[in-house]
Image (cartoon, rainbow, N blue to C red; front, side, top):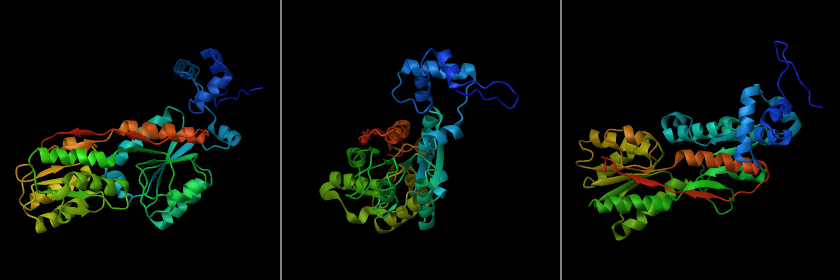
Length: 341
């Protein structure tokens, strides 16, 4: 028989039985809604959500965790330097979207950062100890053993971007990196730019490698290895890469920076060297993370569907936690034309 505990002021706390009666559904339906909403119709879920608000019901997560063996939380795992969480708005967009998606299911998002070997060891121990039910891996490097370790340990894991490496089999939510780079490169060529350089991310990341592949394919015989820079995804790296490009190839007339934050740094460096954007040099980015629209000048960029990416990742990891396999998903990008190119 379900207990009816008292609150701190002595009043009886509402129970699942009360919510079920108010919603006109079974207690099993209420339980499924509270535990993530799987296998519940939209109408039933709306009725339960309304009943929870009217009755003032709150779940006893500690008791439920003991009963189910679950932590009722999911990790947002960033394998990048900590400062990028605040410097690069793409991570903030994913963090906010995932937090909101889990909050709708009465679950908690736990932020974990693992950039150094010691941090990776701590994160692996924390996750494998059951403190979270699953992992949203927000970035991956080919040389990083953490993903393979999580998969080997049976931790439900979903990645943004397709991890590099033939032996990694994990559900992913990604965009078509190669085709997105093709679209941007074709656009720049259509605008009559001919000496086009690229600043892209590290070659051990999906974006760094595949965006360069798409650029190279479209440039064809016009591809010049001397007009390629690969570095970290941050503004300082973008500025340094632009400086190196202009020093050895002062005649370039366009640059495709494979992230908005790199494009921001590249623009600053170009101006410091006396180049006007876009009058003397066109600069395009990738992400449409918020920086692009507010930048001076506003950046032409490839828009990633951030709300859809984070929501889909949450849905997929919850299905994995529930024992339901999921296939990887590829979402479309959109070319956004602005002043910079």
